[in-house]
Length: 249
Length: 66
Image (spheres, one colour):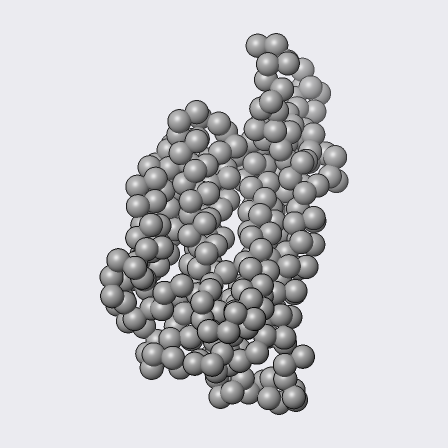
């Protein structure tokens, strides 16, 4: 194969992606801090109280971004896993593996902040409501994916087995998302129309969106870091890892 | 600024435990995760360097023997 025809995919190879990711990580950390602090500033210091829920509603600025990320990361993870399964790209499986722990943590945070929000608003930490139960299943899917991959020694086979689990589990994402519409649940519907006053809703929405953007940048930064570690581990016998190890001394 | 005093900010209208319980746990997780990833990477790099040095040492002794 001549060089020009593979030029488009040059960053799909770990040896090209490793230094590129290393250069991008600080920028994503900076953006995560910027968006996160701006969102928290608006959410905790500027936004007024909610007419129905009082100050407890401020958990929304953590709960909604964590829940969105837990679902979104799963879709991205399943996308990379599926791509790896279909085309056998080395990098795809590594990306999927790198995303899973962050997704699991966001699923946990979604349940944790949800429980702390549920107690003052509903009077209970937990109910077997469709939204809560399907989010718990999402956490189990992440844990299952991680456990399955770490139980298989050969990384290529671990990627394939994990990919099938990840793709089958995708069915859970629309179930979580539409659960508040499909079933009569305790969990409230749309988060965006919490209050009647549009001006209040706008400032709350901005706080929430900025926090979500911060979580997004955080996810990219931390999963790129983890992906770099996985690259070194899996490609440790290749020349580029030896060069990288010698260079970063 | 929405709050009149810092005490009011901490109290969160009697929802302080729930709000700050969410904030603290989320902050701890989002600080701990990158630290653990960095530690894992450092441990791995140290291990790979050790293996590399060991291999180089082996080839040298092999060369000396040859």
